[in-house]
Length: 83
Image 1 (tube, rainbow, N blue to C red):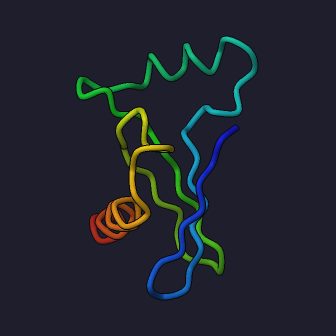
Image 2: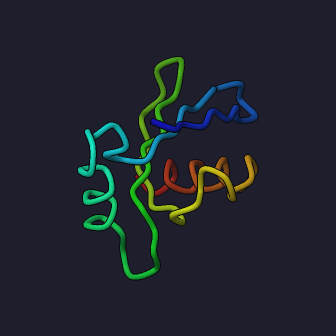
C-alpha cells in the first residue's frame, strides 16, 4: 500500500492513502475502478497526527506521484474548510 506524508504550516503531519489500497489481490484494482469518478479521480483519505480530523477527498488517479506537496496540502485544507 503506497502512502504519502506531508506536513502543513501548523506542523501537522498528514498521512494520505488511496481508499481500498490495502485490499487483497485483484480487489484493489476492482475497487479503484468502481470508485473512480468521471474525471478519473479516486477517493483518498488523509489522517493527521495530533488529533485533528481525518479528511476524505477525491484526487487524480496518479496523485501519489504527480501531485506536489503544496497541491496536496491545499486540497486537504480545502476539504477541512468544507466539512
